Length: 124
Image (cartoon, rainbow, N blue to C red):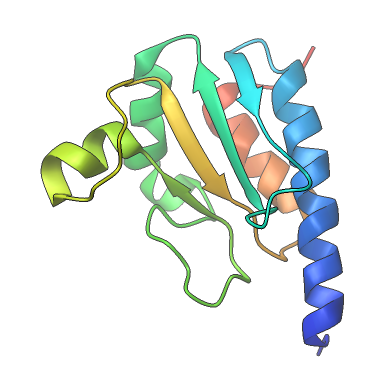
């Protein structure tokens, strides 16, 4: 079992690697990530096509991370603010249907990337 400080380091490392991976993906238009933010494990990115964003919600059993926030911070979760605001009454100020927020957890980096590849495709 890893300690809390070890988990924090794993999460920071995973987040940096995933932000880099997303920035090279052909289906991602732009990545918004600030390592110095107090929310250092959250990455916001804009997809080229809205249909790809919907795939995060319909991924179901094919993806290992949750579409619901993980309160422990150890599991990766994805939020689709466009749907959240309209369907669940969350106060997420997002009217862009191509935006995805991902809160990176302490899982194995390769597992997170494999899940992203199932939705976004492999990097060239």
